Length: 481
Image (cartoon, rainbow, N blue to C red):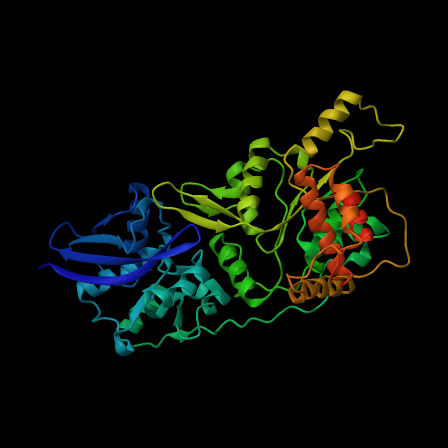
């Protein structure tokens, strides 16, 4: 006799989540024969093995043929969706169709989302992108969710009005469906702003007042920064301390960061509380830097969204990768797909480092770089126009007045607050400054002039000045390459 059942789940397409209706039909035939329509042959073969083994582990045998039909509630091709988390809902659908259990009993006939990849023994593995699944669930009409306990704090990342329950194995679900066991509700993830001192502090770096000032301006205005200096000057140390002087991550941005890192399998807690820092090696592929792939994954520029993307030895990166990065930064997002588009945000603060010459010791007796080598090196550094600011570093000397990151962060946050308060109708340049501005701009191209004016505006915000003065412009002109 033919029997049918339906179960709801969801699948990832990039950072987006789409519901998937799973229809299960059982009929007489070869025992244990499972057909999954919609998955690739290899993925379906592996899923069949896991599901059969997990069911058998808990004493459930499949007496006939099982046909599973996956129907996404959107016109995204099934081959492009990440379907690994469908093992558990397919197994639940088989249990329902076989009559082993009677069904999901939930108040008001709420739609139930089920997610989880099974092991051969029936344990439920963590689900990549669980935060994204749960954040999208309420919008698709789900009132409850059954998710892997192994995903830890992520299980509590859903909306407050979504009942999220965690299970460790298929046995837990089977006992629940038989009425023998109640499910444990996930503890709601709480967000708390991290006001404490950063782990990496600026006070640990000796001297370099010009570099410190450039770092502060970059943080206050979101200006990409290039640091040029010999090995040992502190370029990497400064870059790693930049997240600590950026404004505290707010809840809305923290949810964005959490969703991105969850999809990438990098989220260690329920909700991110600190800004990300990403430092890809210069051998990174184009897809690794900006994202993509057969099943679309976020690249480094998206993983650094709302944080810092550090390009160490920027001149060593592939030209094609930097061109793709520049396009992503210009748009503030990366778009993939032809017939169905997936969009990922890409708004990090980019910091690059480079040696002043191929050997790194320009100006020292040991440097043997020829003028031609120098010219090629400098051309590669500035080829893509990624950076608004450029600063040269020299080996540091000890200074007793080095500020810590909390002090600098305080000024950066005051600059952000001042920028938000000042009226856009107020002229940036006063009457006394305008002739000076016009005289400077005559010698610049329109691109550089725009960058200088934006940096000068940031410097004025740091000084809490409504008008941009000559000193602000002069400092900006020195910093903009």
